[in-house]
Length: 207
Image (cartoon, rainbow, N blue to C red):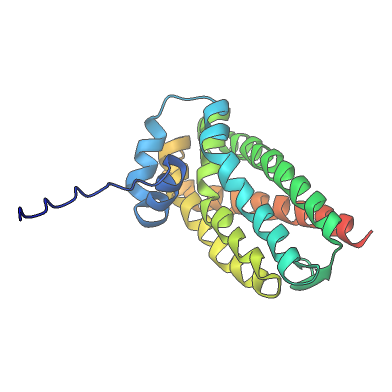
């Protein structure tokens, strides 16, 4: 019998958006340099990255409600709120839309803040920071599958502060001596947007 030829290894590549998320989590400095030099517009940032990333949390929360008898995690209560299954789907869709709107609102804030700290005014570059810097927050959304521990997952989301700090200088051309202030203001803006989105979703759930 002839020896069986070894099967060629199939290269399994991650989707582009997930590969970028992986690099941002583990090789952020190098990835921010790449991102800073990319010529793009808002459309590709949304379609190639934000659409799948912003859907992680809403899908996970909807699944969690289905799996755990109509419970949905809430950052406002650091616990769970009861939700009907029909409303869980509505809340998931609304959260997804609000995520997409919220990240653009954060980009506007980053753009405006940049002018006050000596950075450049560029809305697309600001959207890069808002979208890619929020990667830990997007990924932490998977914890919503387990409603009672969802707030703990947001601790991972705090790593976004570190990504903002690394991304603002190369992307927004922010002076190094003002990076700390720029990062703080950006993080506050991001936190406020998250709280507003959570409040809207919670209001829908309890109404």
